Amino acid sequence: MSAPDIPLVSLHGISKSFGGVHAVEGVSLAVHAGEVLALLGHNGAGKSTLMKMLAGAYPIDAGEIRLMGQTCEIRSPVDAQALGIETIHQTLALADNLDAIANLFLGREMLTRYGTLDDYAMETAARAVFKRLNPHFQNIHVPVRSLSGGQRQIVAISRALHFNAKVLIMDEPCAALGPEETRMVQDLVRTLKAQGVGIVLISHDMSDVFALSDRLCVMKNGRTVGTYATAQVDEDAVLGMIIAGRQPAGIHPCERMP
Image (tube, helix red, strand yellow):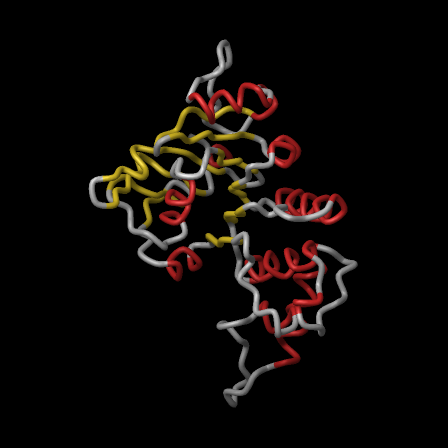
């Protein structure tokens, strides 16, 4: 496999059980640089458990995770972050009473040589990463509770990018947003894709899936139904996979980025 074909991150035969319940069983998938892979399925299909293993929140029972083709061990979220794997939760996990800069560095603040907060360095770095995502975002000194949903996504994504995220797990990024804010978040995803970030998009909104993803992987009962190029399937085929676990007739699975 040539270097451009090597995924940023790949999962091979991943399994996880809780007691006697198989939450994830033998799942394999890959995410390439500059790719959006949509991960679909009903609640309880295994999506969240699979991504929690990739993010280090759960240990894997079987299988392996590879980063750029090299096997790696992810024992905690700190391990995942050190490898460049970050999660943007649906709740965004922002401190509403703090401004955008403080949220960007929360828990990972920059310090002067005297051990005090280096406010100048943090603001300079924050402005640079905000500009990378959206040059028009200027509300960096107000509490994030006063920001719109799209602006809050800018803060959450910028936090991941500043700490060198290579792979982003995005959980329902457009949930509860209006049309204008949804367009803003979709533009953010396209910007990340253009910058070579690999994205796993968890969404129940088919309009987001078809607008943003290159491939989609459907899970049901802890297993993958199939992985397909998004351009090759329609919404009916996807719903057939989600509801009935039925693979679309006459369409070949797509295990690599098209």
